[in-house]
Image 1 (cartoon, helix red, strand yellow):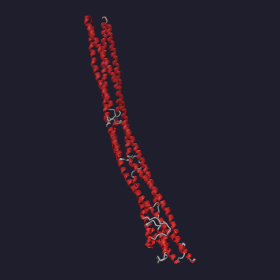
Image 2 (cartoon, one colour):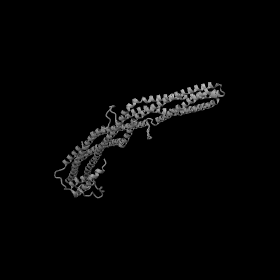
Image 3 (cartoon, rainbow, N blue to C red):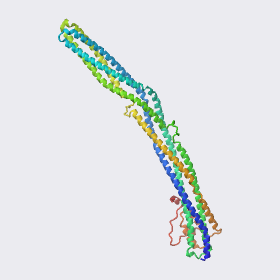
Image 4 (tube, rainbow, N blue to C red):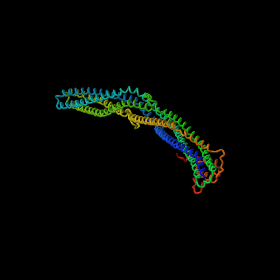
Length: 586
């Protein structure tokens, strides 16, 4: 080839070099914009995964079956608290009855003391009267000793009765002090039942909202994943730009070979024109696909931003109503009700402790009192037998013992009165013991079903409600923080994601430059063998059907699909557009 032809070919191909350089700029733009955009969207996707995980933990906290079980437990606790006034009333009635029995026993003590005074008087009289009778003095002395022993027992009996009355007074005063608490119990029970229902309502509402937020978050997450998938247009466009650059390189390589030196300038120009037209048409098709896909990405991002705004608004509706401490959550209200109940029941429990101590004290005291009464009865029997023996001896002594006989008859009559008194005392003691035992059986706060005592039940419920409330508040705070993080990330992403700015301008410049190089009468006349080799090798670089279609429209089917030169390894079968989108990783 002559030197003049070479200079003309170099001069003519210089615009293609400019196009290639501009395409290099486009590659840099794609590399930067789509890589940065993908990184931002992946970061947003990770934030959304955290948001969904937080929503999942809230949904676990708001399980309906647990809410129903907790509500039922609180209602049961309310029922037990509501039963306290009736139990306290029964307790007070038992105190009154025990007090009545105590007073009755105190009366019996007085009766026994009076009877024993009469007996002591008669015994002393008998001792004086029988002073002159043999062996009678010692006999009368023994009777006096027995009566004194009985008097000591009665005195001890009376002291214990007085101690019992002091216990009863103390227990009754503690019970009567509960009257003002009884007035507050109905409101506590009403609040507890109402607030327990409010817990279930709040849980149900939050659960529904969490479901809606989760559904919208998954929708946004899906749109985000779709947008990430659409970013593959960057990788596709990069490949197609590289294929355009490769077309120029392949043509220049073939034109520089020794076997192409015989070509005339016109023949070289035809090859260059055809390759330039091919690049021009490929750029037009590429730009159209790029603009369409970027428009889809922009629409998705716009909708994505709107969805996130709606998501945050919906999520905020799950949050507590500001800093107004007067507007407590349902769990906070239940906690207040339980704390009030614990205070009242605690006072009632103190009364129950008094009742328990009184019951134990009465039980022990009744045992001792019964023994005392039985001792008095034994003394009474001894006196009667001794008086009877005296009567028998007096009947043998005749007129000398008539006075003594009268006195011992009185001893027998008055000692018999002790039978009635002690029998009544034993009867009262039995009733007293029964009432005292009833204090333990009906002790405030204890269930017949083997359930925990009421105070313990309230403590357990209070602990569970406090823990559940704190856990829910913690998870809602976490959800709010994640929501704010999502809003910030999305705002930054939507503000910075600009994929087609400058890129479209570069591609348009390349299209204009290529169009200026292409003459109006471009045809396929020229070196067929060279064109076949160039077209075939270029065709082998394509990975998309749309590229092959453009290629065939420029070169024709026969020329376009001709095999590469002998000695070159054919490339793998090009993929379809869909397959490329599925496999591409940018």
